[in-house]
Amino acid sequence: MKVVITGAAGFLGQKLARALVKRGHLIGPSGKDEPIDRLTLFDVVAAAHPGDNRVEVVTGDISDRDLIAKLIDRDTGSVFHLASIVSSGAEEDFDLGYRVNLQGALAVVDACRALPHAPRLVFTSSLATYGGEYNVEVDDGTPQTPQTSYGTQKAIGELLINDYSRKGFLDGRSLKLPTIVVRPGKPNKAASTFASSIIREPLQGQSAICPVAPEVSMALLSPRRTVEAFIHAHDLPAQAWGPWRSCNLPGIDAKISELVAAMGRVAGNDPVKRIEWRPDSAIQKIVATWPGRFGWAKAKRLGFKPDGSVDEIIRNFIEDDLQR
Ligand SMILES: NC(=O)c1ccc[n+]([C@@H]2O[C@H](COP(=O)([O-])OP(=O)(O)OC[C@H]3O[C@@H](n4cnc5c(N)ncnc54)[C@H](O)[C@@H]3O)[C@@H](O)[C@H]2O)c1
Image 1 (spheres, helix red, strand yellow):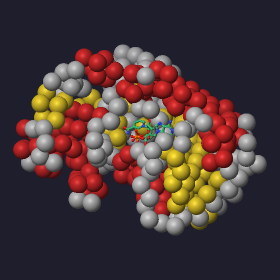
Image 2 (cartoon, helix red, strand yellow; image 1 turned 45 degrees about the horizontal axis):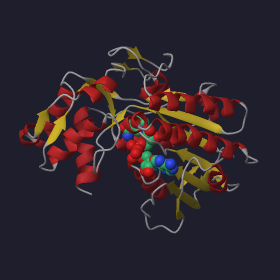
Image 3 (tube, helix red, strand yellow; image 1 turned 90 degrees about the vertical axis):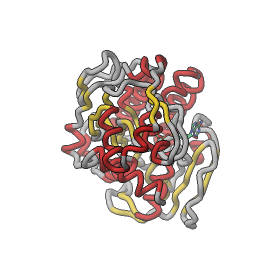
Image 4 (cartoon, protein in one colour; image 1 turned 180 degrees about the vertical axis):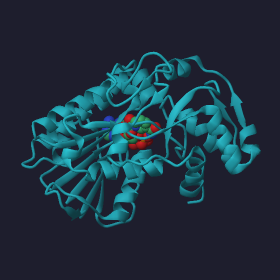
């Protein structure tokens, strides 16, 4: 079967592509394990080719409905829809955020709907769909009251996927990702990007700025566990999800100070000294709308796995990205 990844040039898209190439099979629309004979990596910029002849790289805009209707064709058994303008990006450019995150999601679900079969669709949502007072505890049943454009666009995406799944047009699964650390490469436009920068840069001998206070708490998941979760979400049977096709992915609730302490335990105190604590009011304002505690009972029931500890998250980054 053909599998499409949108946003395949991004941080998680690249890791998912490598994992699918290595794995070589997924549950198909028949409900049985099927080999992946084509993996299409779609993004507005060209994704790196993993050097496997099952893989094709396609570039284009996710909001181009004609193009997406051709991309998600009759051979497509599954779509992982990751393409997105992330949080601060969607906040800075209102039109771009709505075009990519909302019109793009509509192009994807309508292309799935046009097929004679209902493809599986995994959608990456975010805990930014919750919003309000800082330090509120949220769980899978908490009403979505986003306080950013990005969170609003992701919440609409989840509703679309529920409704299109209810109608049998596709078989959707939305995952609310916590903050994924540690992101390799460079900082991005996500408001949470500092959580990766304060580990990634110091571990490579560079300084980093932390724009929030040490006591700010975030729910954290490593990229390794996130990619495992995408594949697990995909392969679960539709009945396991019930009528509400989304769940919070597991995250370890940790204060920034605990994340930094874990880096100290794993890599010594020198990297810790490379962090400069300099508050940034714009970032603090967005972070203040995130939940304080993040419940994930449904994910636990469905068999998703968190990292064992914050130390393990740091060790995974060193092993998967710095030593690779
Ligand atoms: N990384 C996190 O901490 C996190 C947390 C919550 C949710 N998410 C979600 O997970 C998904 C993947 O996140 P990521 O960290 O890999 O993000 P990323 O920014 O690295 O990747 C997103 C990709 O989308 C592509 N894209 C942007 N506009 C496009 C367009 N018009 N057409 C086609 N492609 C376009 C970008 O080029 C990029 O490669 C996103 O949907 C994001 O919202 C990520």
